[in-house]
Image 1: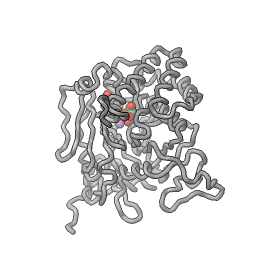
Image 2: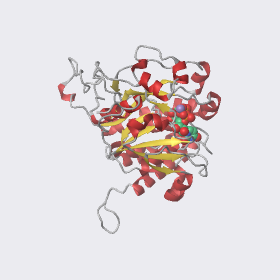
Image 3: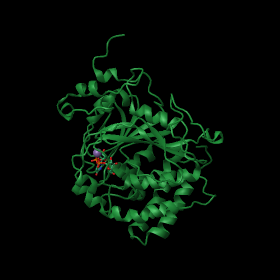
Image 4: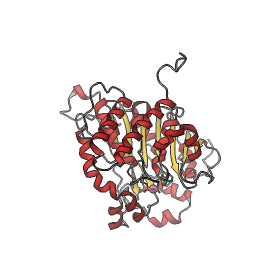
Length: 391
Ligand SMILES: O=c1ccn([C@@H]2O[C@H](COP(=O)(O)OP(=O)(O)O[C@H]3O[C@@H](CO)[C@H](O)[C@H]3O)[C@@H](O)[C@H]2O)c(=O)[nH]1
Ligand SMILES: [Mn+2]
């Protein structure tokens, strides 16, 4: 077989898992040159690009990718008045991509995230190489290799996470028991070893960590260089700060809960889109007996957004969350909430009842949560379609 021309091509996976069952959703206000670095991994998949901001701006997508692109005009045309639930000028707009997708799985990634490799594993990557090195040099240095020498593929790791069970009811101290070379440790109840279906896989980030604005302000130069080779199930009853930068989920299991809220333009808050979705998702996963994992894969997060702008977007969320988190920790869903939609509508009801006192914003958000489910069900009819034809 001819030698691959470049290291990037050498990284190309032999098989693209779930090629026809997974969409990659990218929110963007930038150009999409970052796709060149991901080409060996993403080219076999269908992309759903959600263009935020000015719809008259043309977003250039590199040649050779199979994609659909939606801007604000498209969202308004497709959803009509229900488009009011989709944020504008915030990465929260990405959830429109989850709604229009027809696939079982979603992987969402920001346009300033790259893949990387063992170059971090126990050694510091020289930032100069990152800045000076051309794409191939960087890939040569950073393409991860597993013990067999195969390039590690972030998307593949997410798929492995989603296709193997989670263990939310009892913590396995050797981490992911379904990973090759690991298992349940002594004392782990056999009655729980089957695990539960995995709804979401939350990946992490090297270089620029997903810090909030105050932390970013006091630690402007901090870079995350610690590559922890582990995947953990987040225990039942425990919430977590879900970051939308490097996230995959089973759309059929938990899709309707992945609403990224009302953020950005015209809203009193921003950059809490993924957090809101994560809290709702975890409460519903716990109720329905589904699992959420966090850890591998890492991506290389290259751009630090402006901490002062971020502070302006986040500051209300920083003190509201001291009331929001206890709300989610105490949220109880009735037994008859047997679907994600029913759980979500019930959560919206409780948001309206219990959080509107925090700020009238939550009254609006609760209504938007209901609109989201109505729009979701309109675009994703599951029961018999009107005039009797099966869906
Ligand atoms: O108005 C906007 C701003 C950005 N985007 C797209 O969203 C992602 C993330 O944007 P960016 O990388 O600039 O911001 P970060 O601070 O690094 O993002 C983190 O905070 C979360 C914001 O909610 C986000 O999920 C985290 O990754 C990029 O693809 C931008 O192009 C947008 O669509 N609209
Ligand atoms: Mn970013």
